[in-house]
Length: 322
Image 1: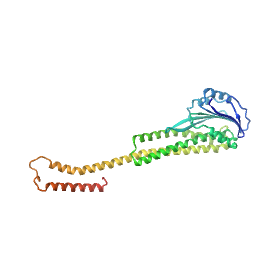
Image 2 (image 1 turned 180 degrees about the vertical axis):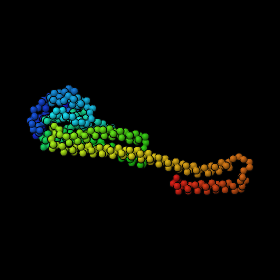
Image 3 (image 1 turned 90 degrees about the horizontal axis):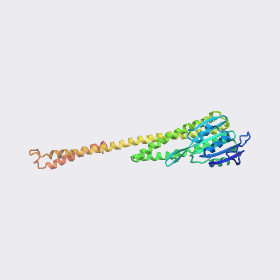
Image 4 (image 1 turned 120 degrees about the vertical axis):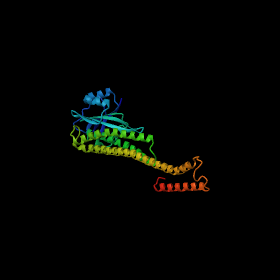
């Protein structure tokens, strides 16, 4: 069985466990409801829940396939919410999906590929009965807030890696592996942003649109979820800009260093060209050449070479080519 937890709650207290085939006749008071949590359920379990809680077939189909972007669908007096979970796995962002069915007296969460279970969240809510007694809309907020809070450690981990790359770029040339990693991180952030945008739309809809099962008093809580998503979006945008600047700055520094090396080579080539040219002239094997029989010609030529090379060296030194 993939039913992680299924309990009846009344006035913020856990009354008893329930079966997914058991239809509970809850009172009109919103403080009495059923909260069922499943992880990677089978088709049979989902269809049993569909019959028990009168879930819409399209929503059940989406929950089984688990390939949806974040959204909020309205089916009669029930809500169907899809949120995407994310976690770091082997230096890459992996994604899961959580589908949530919300009715007046029930909330059903269906997790696929999520690394963080809701048991901790459930225990935290049970520790505050006054909060849990406020109904399914507050439980829905807690689940969405739990999912969104999982985004921040991912971005902080990537941020640390990007800052390390930035420092490495200043100290050393970035290698091929570093450049590949930069483009890989940019692709991951772009994909992550495709999740954040609809997640913000989901939170905004709960804040601004009147929906069944969602009281007006609960909207401020969903506004907090929206603010958290916005914060992560800003961090993602900043990281994408930093990655672009790291790559561009690395290219500029590499060009600068290459230019400095080229100037040094050109300066030494110019200096060495002087003795090479003079030695080439006097190395020609002609019988009648001037200065061949000069007594101090050898020392004069060496002196001329030394003076010219010294002047060139001083000149290039002032130009900071050496």
